[in-house]
Amino acid sequence: GIQVEQSPPDLILQEGANSTLRCNFSDSVNNLQWFHQNPWGQLINLFYIPSGTKQNGRLSATTVATERYSLLYISSSQTTDSGVYFCAVGENRDDKIIFGKGTRLHILP
Amino acid sequence: GAVVSQHPSWVICKSGTSVKIECRSLDFQATTMFWYRQFPKQSLMLMATSNEGSKATYEQGVEKDKFLINHASLTLSTLTVTSAHPEDSSFYICSAQLVDTQYFGPGTRLTVL
Image 1 (cartoon, rainbow over the protein chains, first blue to last red):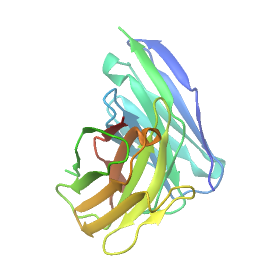
Image 2 (cartoon, one colour):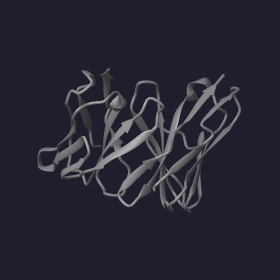
Image 3 (cartoon, rainbow over the protein chains, first blue to last red):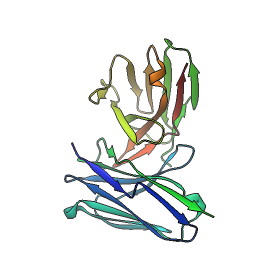
Protein backbone atom coordinates (compact mmCIF):
# COMPACT_ATOMS: atom_id res chain seq x y z
CA GLY A 1 0.00 0.00 0.00
CA ILE A 2 0.89 3.65 -0.21
CA GLN A 3 3.33 4.91 2.41
CA VAL A 4 3.04 8.43 3.79
CA GLU A 5 5.82 10.22 5.60
CA GLN A 6 5.52 13.59 7.26
CA SER A 7 8.27 15.86 8.48
CA PRO A 8 9.23 17.25 10.84
CA PRO A 9 7.52 15.14 13.52
CA ASP A 10 7.60 18.02 15.99
CA LEU A 11 7.93 21.76 15.58
CA ILE A 12 8.04 24.49 18.21
CA LEU A 13 7.80 28.08 17.01
CA GLN A 14 7.30 31.53 18.38
CA GLU A 15 4.06 33.30 17.56
CA GLY A 16 4.41 35.19 14.29
CA ALA A 17 6.85 32.75 12.70
CA ASN A 18 6.32 30.95 9.41
CA SER A 19 6.53 27.20 8.93
CA THR A 20 6.62 24.58 6.20
CA LEU A 21 5.33 21.05 6.75
CA ARG A 22 6.16 18.30 4.30
CA CYS A 23 4.34 15.16 3.19
CA ASN A 24 6.04 12.54 1.01
CA PHE A 25 4.12 9.64 -0.48
CA SER A 26 5.34 6.48 -2.14
CA ASP A 27 3.00 6.09 -5.11
CA SER A 28 0.70 7.99 -7.43
CA VAL A 29 -2.34 9.43 -5.69
CA ASN A 30 -5.61 10.94 -6.83
CA ASN A 31 -6.56 12.14 -3.38
CA LEU A 32 -4.51 14.18 -0.93
CA GLN A 33 -5.94 16.05 2.02
CA TRP A 34 -4.44 18.13 4.81
CA PHE A 35 -6.10 18.22 8.23
CA HIS A 36 -5.53 20.00 11.50
CA GLN A 37 -6.40 18.08 14.65
CA ASN A 38 -7.06 20.49 17.48
CA PRO A 39 -6.28 19.71 21.14
CA TRP A 40 -9.83 18.36 21.62
CA GLY A 41 -9.36 15.78 18.88
CA GLN A 42 -11.49 17.35 16.16
CA LEU A 43 -10.08 17.05 12.67
CA ILE A 44 -10.57 20.16 10.58
CA ASN A 45 -10.33 20.06 6.81
CA LEU A 46 -7.66 22.38 5.46
CA PHE A 47 -7.16 21.44 1.83
CA TYR A 48 -8.11 18.85 -0.75
CA ILE A 49 -5.08 19.11 -3.02
CA PRO A 50 -4.00 16.10 -5.12
CA SER A 51 -2.08 18.55 -7.33
CA GLY A 52 -1.42 22.24 -7.72
CA THR A 53 -1.50 25.10 -5.25
CA LYS A 54 -4.23 26.47 -3.02
CA GLN A 55 -4.41 29.25 -0.48
CA ASN A 56 -6.78 29.98 2.35
CA GLY A 57 -5.87 32.97 4.47
CA ARG A 58 -2.57 32.36 6.25
CA LEU A 59 -2.43 28.78 5.02
CA SER A 60 -1.40 27.54 1.62
CA ALA A 61 -0.52 24.17 0.16
CA THR A 62 1.30 22.88 -2.85
CA THR A 63 1.35 19.34 -4.20
CA VAL A 64 3.86 18.25 -6.82
CA ALA A 65 2.29 14.96 -7.85
CA THR A 66 5.06 13.97 -10.25
CA GLU A 67 7.60 14.20 -7.43
CA ARG A 68 5.25 12.72 -4.82
CA TYR A 69 5.27 15.38 -2.18
CA SER A 70 3.05 18.07 -0.74
CA LEU A 71 3.89 21.11 1.36
CA LEU A 72 1.73 22.99 3.82
CA TYR A 73 2.75 26.56 4.59
CA ILE A 74 1.59 28.42 7.67
CA SER A 75 2.43 32.12 7.82
CA SER A 76 2.32 34.45 10.81
CA SER A 77 1.61 31.59 13.21
CA GLN A 78 -0.87 32.08 16.03
CA THR A 79 -1.25 30.06 19.22
CA THR A 80 -4.52 28.69 17.86
CA ASP A 81 -2.52 27.01 15.08
CA SER A 82 -1.13 24.57 17.66
CA GLY A 83 -2.09 20.95 17.25
CA VAL A 84 -1.27 18.09 14.92
CA TYR A 85 -1.24 18.47 11.16
CA PHE A 86 -1.99 15.34 9.16
CA CYS A 87 -1.53 14.59 5.51
CA ALA A 88 -3.69 11.78 4.14
CA VAL A 89 -3.54 10.24 0.67
CA GLY A 90 -5.58 7.84 -1.41
CA GLU A 91 -5.30 6.09 -4.75
CA ASN A 92 -8.80 7.05 -5.72
CA ARG A 93 -10.61 10.34 -5.52
CA ASP A 94 -13.53 9.09 -3.46
CA ASP A 95 -12.14 6.15 -1.54
CA LYS A 96 -10.26 5.48 1.66
CA ILE A 97 -7.27 7.62 2.63
CA ILE A 98 -4.15 6.68 4.56
CA PHE A 99 -2.83 9.05 7.19
CA GLY A 100 0.76 10.02 7.84
CA LYS A 101 2.00 10.16 11.42
CA GLY A 102 1.49 13.90 11.56
CA THR A 103 3.51 16.96 12.53
CA ARG A 104 2.91 18.19 16.07
CA LEU A 105 3.06 21.99 16.03
CA HIS A 106 3.36 24.06 19.18
CA ILE A 107 3.17 27.84 18.87
CA LEU A 108 4.53 29.74 21.85
CA PRO A 109 2.95 33.07 22.83
CA GLY B 1 -22.02 22.84 5.77
CA ALA B 2 -20.69 19.25 5.85
CA VAL B 3 -21.16 18.63 9.56
CA VAL B 4 -20.68 15.19 11.09
CA SER B 5 -21.74 14.33 14.63
CA GLN B 6 -20.87 11.44 16.89
CA HIS B 7 -22.61 10.14 19.94
CA PRO B 8 -21.62 9.65 22.66
CA SER B 9 -18.58 11.90 22.93
CA TRP B 10 -17.21 9.75 25.70
CA VAL B 11 -18.17 6.47 27.35
CA ILE B 12 -16.85 4.41 30.24
CA CYS B 13 -17.91 0.79 30.46
CA LYS B 14 -17.06 -2.41 32.25
CA SER B 15 -15.09 -5.15 30.58
CA GLY B 16 -17.34 -7.57 28.72
CA THR B 17 -20.08 -5.11 27.82
CA SER B 18 -20.92 -3.84 24.35
CA VAL B 19 -20.84 -0.20 23.33
CA LYS B 20 -22.54 1.42 20.34
CA ILE B 21 -21.23 4.61 18.75
CA GLU B 22 -23.33 6.58 16.27
CA CYS B 23 -22.02 8.68 13.42
CA ARG B 24 -24.39 11.05 11.61
CA SER B 25 -23.97 13.35 8.65
CA LEU B 26 -26.20 16.26 9.60
CA ASP B 27 -26.56 18.27 6.41
CA PHE B 28 -25.63 15.90 3.61
CA GLN B 29 -26.11 12.31 2.57
CA ALA B 30 -23.14 9.99 2.66
CA THR B 31 -23.07 6.73 0.79
CA THR B 32 -19.72 6.00 2.35
CA MET B 33 -18.53 6.52 5.89
CA PHE B 34 -15.28 5.48 7.52
CA TRP B 35 -14.32 4.41 11.02
CA TYR B 36 -10.90 5.11 12.54
CA ARG B 37 -9.27 4.57 15.89
CA GLN B 38 -6.52 6.70 17.34
CA PHE B 39 -4.27 5.87 20.29
CA PRO B 40 -2.67 8.69 22.29
CA LYS B 41 -0.09 10.69 20.32
CA GLN B 42 -0.50 8.41 17.32
CA SER B 43 -2.04 8.74 13.89
CA LEU B 44 -5.48 7.68 12.74
CA MET B 45 -5.75 4.05 11.74
CA LEU B 46 -8.54 3.12 9.36
CA MET B 47 -10.68 0.29 10.74
CA ALA B 48 -13.35 -0.11 8.10
CA THR B 49 -15.24 1.44 5.23
CA SER B 50 -18.99 1.54 5.74
CA ASN B 51 -21.23 1.56 2.68
CA GLU B 52 -24.94 2.27 2.91
CA GLY B 53 -27.00 -0.84 2.32
CA SER B 54 -24.08 -3.25 2.13
CA LYS B 55 -21.55 -4.95 4.33
CA ALA B 56 -18.61 -2.98 5.66
CA THR B 57 -15.12 -3.55 4.32
CA TYR B 58 -12.67 -4.13 7.14
CA GLU B 59 -8.97 -3.39 7.07
CA GLN B 60 -6.51 -6.19 7.61
CA GLY B 61 -6.19 -7.11 11.27
CA VAL B 62 -9.54 -5.64 12.35
CA GLU B 63 -11.91 -8.25 13.79
CA LYS B 64 -15.25 -7.87 12.05
CA ASP B 65 -17.06 -9.88 14.74
CA LYS B 66 -15.74 -7.58 17.43
CA PHE B 67 -16.33 -4.28 15.67
CA LEU B 68 -19.79 -4.48 14.13
CA ILE B 69 -20.63 -1.79 11.62
CA ASN B 70 -24.09 -0.98 10.32
CA HIS B 71 -24.83 1.70 7.73
CA ALA B 72 -28.61 1.63 7.72
CA SER B 73 -29.27 4.98 6.06
CA LEU B 74 -27.51 7.66 4.07
CA THR B 75 -26.98 9.72 7.21
CA LEU B 76 -26.22 7.16 9.90
CA SER B 77 -23.52 4.58 10.52
CA THR B 78 -23.01 2.77 13.82
CA LEU B 79 -19.99 1.01 15.29
CA THR B 80 -20.61 -1.52 18.04
CA VAL B 81 -17.66 -2.69 20.08
CA THR B 82 -18.73 -6.10 21.35
CA SER B 83 -17.45 -7.64 24.56
CA ALA B 84 -15.15 -4.69 25.13
CA HIS B 85 -11.85 -5.18 26.93
CA PRO B 86 -9.37 -2.64 28.31
CA GLU B 87 -7.22 -2.92 25.18
CA ASP B 88 -10.19 -1.58 23.18
CA SER B 89 -9.91 1.71 25.04
CA SER B 90 -9.18 4.33 22.40
CA PHE B 91 -10.45 7.39 20.56
CA TYR B 92 -12.85 6.33 17.81
CA ILE B 93 -13.47 8.77 14.96
CA CYS B 94 -15.85 8.52 12.04
CA SER B 95 -15.89 10.40 8.78
CA ALA B 96 -18.40 10.83 5.99
CA GLN B 97 -17.52 11.18 2.35
CA LEU B 98 -18.85 14.13 0.37
CA VAL B 99 -17.63 14.08 -3.23
CA ASP B 100 -13.84 13.88 -2.82
CA THR B 101 -13.47 15.04 0.77
CA GLN B 102 -13.91 13.28 4.09
CA TYR B 103 -15.54 15.24 6.91
CA PHE B 104 -14.84 14.05 10.41
CA GLY B 105 -16.93 13.72 13.53
CA PRO B 106 -15.62 14.99 16.87
CA GLY B 107 -14.70 11.51 18.06
CA THR B 108 -15.75 9.20 20.87
CA ARG B 109 -13.40 8.44 23.73
CA LEU B 110 -13.97 4.88 24.97
CA THR B 111 -12.57 3.72 28.29
CA VAL B 112 -13.04 0.10 29.26
CA LEU B 113 -12.47 -0.70 32.91
